[in-house]
Image: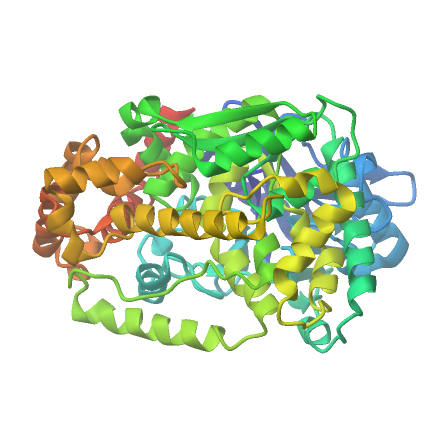
Length: 616
């Protein structure tokens, strides 16, 4: 974290003066990504391949080199790189070493051996070849700008924006997708002429040859694989998960489990094979009360004899909201606003617990068919016709995606669409989900197709690894050892509370807004607030954050967005929301994020660097 940058000359080798010029440019790119005091950076070059590159990461994450008289190879990888040879703690002290050893053993096929999500670069001076790659699911994103003579790549779009003036504008396709889905899809980014390297692809550099794109992920073969018998699937899945979790929970300099009340993180702690009080756990909590997540996670950690801490999104966050919001927009490249500010605040605290954050992300999607990806036309009528057509096209594209194989949809659409949140998380900690491991993914494609098996798979993993955890109800009321009638009643009650909190908060329908603004409605909001959620932006936008956000919306400078969004209507929407007549939480979030992205990312480079200095 946060990643790599570089310039590749399409003609191959580069002369001395061009090399020096590119090195200076790379340093400018690195300065934009070095927004934390615990980051360090460095520069790498290979004139034979026409490559000048750099890396930014936490202290101690410098590139790995092999200089043994016969080989002269360099590599730097961002994320969690490991192969079948070394899935545990052996790779943790030197995360590039395993990749280099794989390359020396099998050459370019090393890409197929990587199991964890990562991006990186490897170049071999002796053989005059190199690779710049993302992971097979595109979680560790790489942005590209290309012209007739070179390709510029970066883990964060802001690095390209800082040196290529023609990219400092919004891409209308990307804007349409952002307003419809909260993200961009496929190769589109938010910015003009900046593309995203597709999932599972690498830029191949050969000495004196044109640069080529190489795909190393065979999704079709996974989709055509035969289901396994139930017993064999569980045996193999439990075994793989235990190996991965056991290895990374012991990884230096320290790992912690981001523990919720659900099944996914419970599977992870069930697989811990460590001594007591050695793997800290934490749960994000609400400022109003202990959520069901917190209650369940606290008990799970106690049963596993591991320490547990609640990281609360509270008054300190609200008082510093403007600072966290600006930085979240900067770090996420304009992809995340309000929720990004919350994630930034909480992950800053998480870093104090441990630098590696093990999560259960995507477990429910792979094992239980859960889909968190949503797409819709925003409310309020604030999108002008020039842009509105792209919004509707994005919704149609999402409908086509829904027809994909469910596991493929999760991995190749939903996982990379979370770039904004992932970028903010990795700016503070190293996020790692075992459920994105290549071996576990291959097994997920071979999951038995029994209709009632989805939840049973997750429960069976917990039962196999730590059956005592089955007696603790989940946040949504599953599990427990009581009579069937009691468990059913609890399940129904907690699901009802979950829906009521959503309808009284972020998802409140407009017809209910005026009622909710009354004293009785406010009482109902307070009754449910914080039962399941720790972010409460609908209410905060009407109270603690109203003035700050109103100023952003009402004092918008006349920029590119003015030709695409109806700002008089946007200001009216803000007023309607504050008065309680409508619920525009999601729309205001996206609009404010785009306004700040234009101010922070698309102004002159000096303006961006000045703002960057505030966070240093």
